[in-house]
Amino acid sequence: MVRGGRWAVLCVATVLMLTGCGHGWAADKPAFESAEKLPEKLAKDGTTILVGDPDAKVTVHLYEDPRCPVCEEFETTGGSPRLREATLDRRTVTEYTLASFLDDRLGGSGSKKAVNALRAALEEGKFVEYHEVLYANQPEESVDGYTDARLLELAGQVEGLRGPKFNAAVKSMKYRSFVTASEKAYERAGGAKDPQGPGTPTAVINDRQIPDESNGVLFDGDVFAELLQEIHARPWEWEQTAL
Image (cartoon, rainbow, N blue to C red):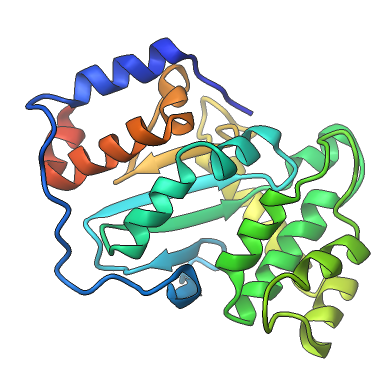
């Protein structure tokens, strides 16, 4: 897990606000009506989950572990709500790689079970809603709280998700191979520098990873929204900015 400080937030903000605020966020297409209407699918690589308009100018790729409390902070009180707004407005497309390394580190199987359940929710077109529910009800990191029973109970909060197919997929770990492949994809993302993975949460925006020392930008919703706005307005400057 990775957590930057307030100084890192300010540094990123200062570097990127090259000409100040005021850029519009006008989309080429009408915004999606609600999170439930967001398109979601599995990418061709078999591990990345895509949410939103694939033609959006800004791509935010997130690496998360369902048991990670810092991911929960990002998702509930950090930058994720503002990212969701941008995705609804077709300004960004959000991608997810779901890790499960915390099971091996802490013991248990909650991360793997949660990733499997999220993949099952994707099959039902309910990934976005279920992903939000899981983080809103995340158990303590040290508690292996994502049991089959708890995952099914939480699925009851998502209209239309519970059913024989979804229930069976959760109980049988139907997507076990996806869970394994997704963890491997997470580890590969760390490269030679971090062979066990880049840490969670990690964000890669338009193929550029926010470095560890600047990761605090993810936890300030206003700053993260401004960062996305600046990249949307001047993507070439993001590509050239030294972070």
